[in-house]
Image (cartoon, rainbow, N blue to C red):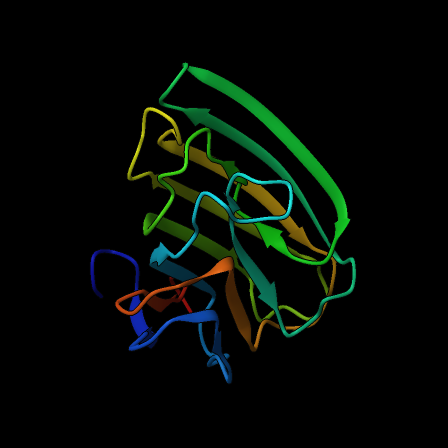
Amino acid sequence: MINGLGTPIASVELTKTQYSITIDNIPQNYSEISIILHAKSIGSGSGFSGGGATDWDELNINANYGNNYARQTMYAAASGNTYASTRNFNVPLMYGEQFSAGGTNWDNEFSTHLWWIPNYTNTSQWKNVYHLGGRTGADPNNVGAMGFAVAHIYKSTDAVRRIDIGSSYGYIAGTTVEIFGTKRLGL
């Protein structure tokens, strides 16, 4: 067991910029999995066509991009003491919270995320996915250091065999994803 998260079962470290990371053939002999993402985004202040950067980390299960996910997010921003919540139903991905820059210094954002999926091999129930994360900007007074907690539902009875993690801007080299498996006592 490492860091109390369980047995390491997969890891990826990027050596170049990529928009997504895929881990396939996830072992099916654990009760739950934890997915840890340490990432830097290449977002910039002139990002989307509306101007101003918006970036988020996203998780997809089994390459299922149908509208099979729902979420309830609670988040807090360090700048401005903002606390809020959002919810979405029937969306194609599990999203971390979106972050919109107030300034232009949005380069190389750092984020850390933990997704926890209990009963990931169960084939008779939808999957609950719990997600904690945060991002600290290079210009935190404009961008805001954000922390959030998300409760997701993956509306499928399929066992989790593959995950895709992505960023709307892409991740730079050095970004890592690690998956840990744990077994319930008695199994």
